[in-house]
Image (cartoon, rainbow, N blue to C red; front, side):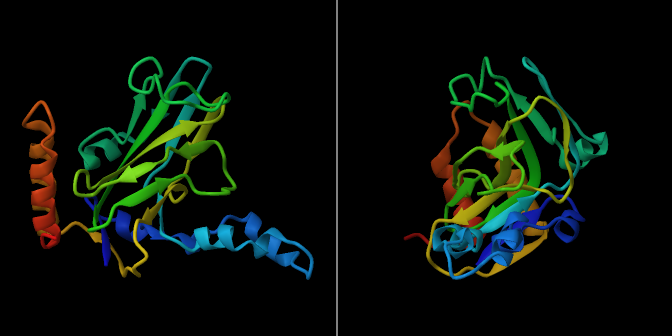
Length: 231
């Protein structure tokens, strides 16, 4: 089983985390309509098994992005920051935090970090990937491994691949999460309960009480939270 819970009520009902197979890109329909006995991309097992694996995170709100040659800005309804308890969007500057991260020649030098209200309860690590073969290329999630026992929050670092002004609309896909296991997992998507709220408060303390993160202590407390027994 894998559980995703939202710290903001209403998100799980309106813009839930969904199985990847429910977020198939639009171009796939056209490819399938053209299927014949000849070669067709719709017959590629590697691509379509990827579409059927894992989960997709949808944007819970509108994010307006303004990108120029030397600047990156993001704007949201200020109520979202009040609900989330921290900025829903942050800029990782290209001359500081994201200085050494390779970027495509057409990407903004700054990286956009989108903080979501989602946390995950899982004994497995998850691969975080951009949505493969997406219809949209203007925002692209960075790749990485999400270890819930160290950080259960789902926040997306992403590349902005345009110059101008565009909006990521609520409900648009932000990233693809793939559990690092072959086991079949039952999916639960819900609002935060009292046990979850207790964990979120503990995690906030553990993230900020020392200058160097105590990962072993965080893992121990997270495993207690999810009910994972010691191997």
